[in-house]
Image 1 (cartoon, rainbow, N blue to C red):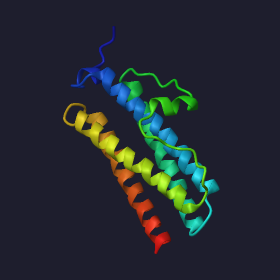
Image 2: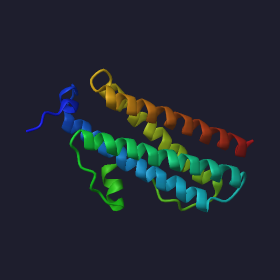
Image 3: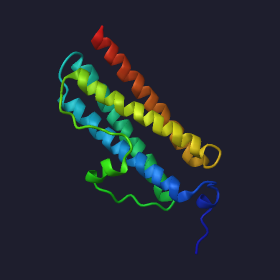
Image 4: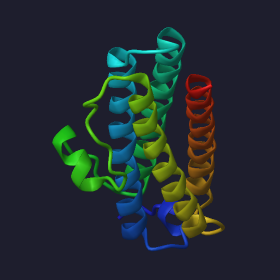
Length: 161
């Protein structure tokens, strides 16, 4: 058997870590889809500006999924899941967009970002000082999710003003 230093330096239950990263991976795909759909369907104030920002968020969520996928594979995990599995594996309760009014779309996005922030904050505490590679990935993603939350809050304030 070939020695795997990547696994040797992880001072945490690797199966548990893979499970958590798989949850995050599913959530990132659901978030990406929600942003993409919101950018296409949302109607109302500041539509062009908000739709453009939602597409930026979409692209960042896809990049998060890629980072997570790479780490899952490094740790010996498996990525085989279909879109219909995302909700089962994910932890954030992303709802289908049923109301295309901008305010509703942004509120759904805010709910998702706040769930992601809480999830990644807990995951960061779990890996901190125990898996530096995963820690760096989670810190990057958490930073982006915080920025997304602030973008959405600003848009909600702009619409409500």
